Image 1 (tube, one colour):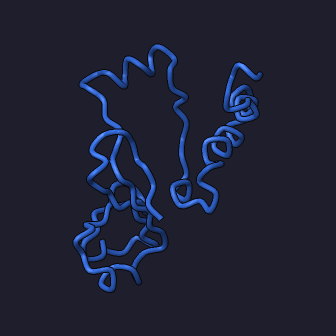
Image 2 (cartoon, rainbow, N blue to C red):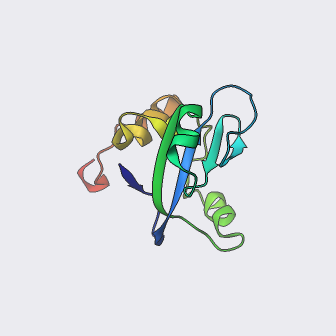
Length: 121
């Protein structure tokens, strides 16, 4: 399955992987944080697949100009919350946004119940 990662460069792809344990990075993988890493998509699958506990391929990415994201966060346009390493590999990606908000509690948990079209609220 191929996921759309964002509107920029839809003709390119990124491989996000979960690497179990604290061992060295498998061939073709660069850890980002904790168990999350990026895999070089030119690496033969048989070389790396046994070393992974999760894999998602994303076409495209989201990007911002310098300082743009920080400004949007300061304006309140984003909810900034902690993620969990398993989040990108959920079996129900269409529910991920709601799942993450629900686990925050309080007002953000309530936001998870809003309809997709806010005018229907």
